[in-house]
Length: 493
Image 1 (spheres, helix red, strand yellow):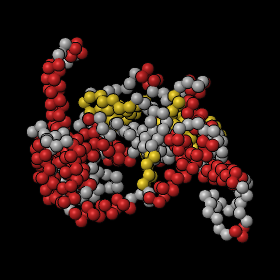
Image 2 (tube, rainbow, N blue to C red):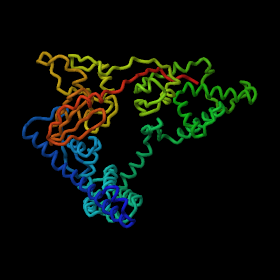
Image 3 (cartoon, rainbow, N blue to C red):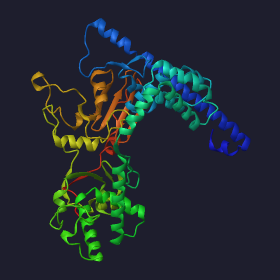
Image 4 (cartoon, helix red, strand yellow):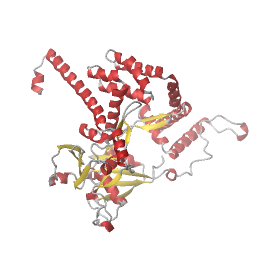
């Protein structure tokens, strides 16, 4: 429906169209889930294993294997099946694998819920959540089906919060002993995690630790926040507490601040008690003497900051920078990050100036250039941004003594892949080529083409060879120059 038609609708008309569009959307979601389960059937792991037994050829390292498609009661599936399904629906291979697993879990372990979806009751995301709750709890097939029998009748009449609570209660009822074991394991689980950076360069820190450690840490955060206020920091208490976390991340700076504050407090309260007066309560840390001789810089670990800057950002204060591990930040934030660092600039990396080599191993400088050109895994819809990806020869390397040409290891024949798409490219029925440096063209087993370049993933349709992109398009794919800064650590206060 075009905007002009929408504008002509009255309230009743909007209600009718919303009802129709919603029903169509829900139906499409269910149809895609059903197709995902059938996709698993078409890529039977049992058949793969049977073919291997008939041929008498064992699976070599890295080759495709059969794996359980979901929890107890689900069939085996070919390991590489998720790659093509995910590419067709705009998912990375990991997300697609989770989607297929949820689909078979619902179909095989929750048959009443599976049927209810087809009758327009419930949503796909709800069914996936129910299947995950039961699978994560380790319920056997008969236990999951019992939960399905006693909960599915309520999926269309209860709010999601109430329905989810019902499912969780029935999971406990299905296996009380395992539920108690999970409770005890959860009580022992400890972690420190961070979320993604937001558009302002801020991260969320979540920690699970013993109550005593958390209480002491929070008390120390409050103490540092108080000292910052005394030193003239006029920000709110919450902002100062967040700054205190940064101070505690540099122990030398925290010790100096605490020592100075303790000394100031001691001077205000009068002279310290005589040594023979016995132990006295004190909040002062026992650091074995004065910290005046400590050079905080010697206590801090070295760090390498990878900062991507445009030419505009380098020349002025405007523009956007990207710090690996943090995300997009402003130029002023770059100054804040580096303001308390001892910075040693490293030569700007020239991505285009990497000369190819004859050996199989990728030189460190060339691998760094590859990471600049391919910060994410270059598989369709790739998400891996780490530096632990495989440097892959697009045209397989052939040793020179076996007739291989010179210069096979170069930017025109290399890309970075996560281990799974590396295996798919090597042992699966996918095909990969690089018509120009930084431009990858994948062909799926069913004949679908996908182009991966600096702008992401672009589905190109089926069968027709996409050919080489236009020269102007390739020129636009040239990556920004990147300034790498090495720092031995942060300075003290």
